[in-house]
Image (cartoon, rainbow, N blue to C red):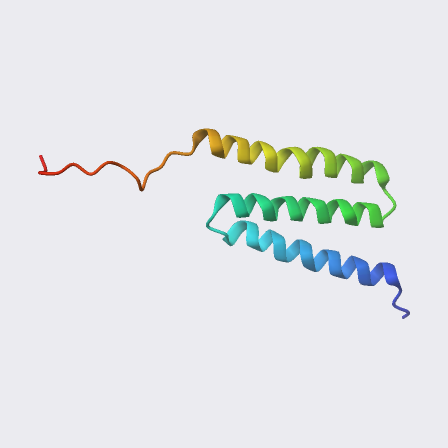
Length: 93
């Protein structure tokens, strides 16, 4: 069995995709999780390009890798409240 360059690129992209998807789930900071989600979606698009499916690559990168993390971060920034910085009342109730 001959190993060509496309197979090696596929294995590298797949490893990056699996690692990034694990980091999406295990990361506690939401902004970093959105970054790893974007990396995951871009590597999926690159695998589509490797399979010579240019239309799916463009849709994957433009719609999913471009819009989904931006929408996620936009919603996060609009709804984020500072829970740890609540004012402390002195004297108690």
